Image (cartoon, rainbow, N blue to C red):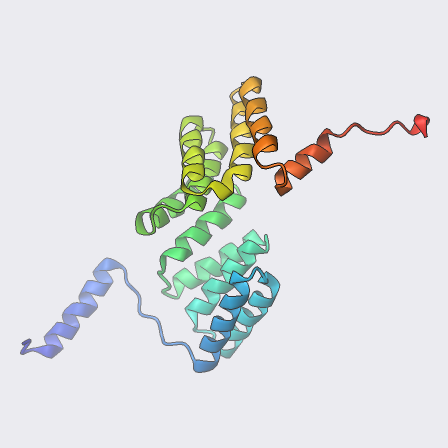
Length: 220
């Protein structure tokens, strides 16, 4: 039994400062409920609806760091990466430290072309939540942006091993990688695999459409 509880509390406070931990105020009940319903919309792919709820949560409680984080996550999924990164950085400044923040920050940084910063965030997420295919895919894309082709190839192939549903996108990036290596035969091989193994994917349909011959107006 600890006899000096006051000293213990002081020690906890010092330890938190040393470890870089930040206290967050509890969200208001209204904000918390809006975050819950917004999170359901986010999981259902209703990103604009989710964002509306997260924004309402922030309005109800401007100190709700979780609402700020999830608004950034929704903006990421809506393709608004600059706004997303701003919200995510705001959540971090407010003391939010859940691993998902690193993943979403890495995602936004990747799409904005900040390759090195994206890798740092994604590797932090991987250390805390290992094994996700999307993490490997994003790391592969970031290494490709840095022209570190061997690392990019390793991560992209790891992404497929972890999650076969990612194969269409990853095969496209592997083809781009081989094109950058000036290896057209390997690039074509990856594209053929994509068309053969995932013919109904959105990427395959786009490729097929681009491969269609342009009609000659003179033959009409």
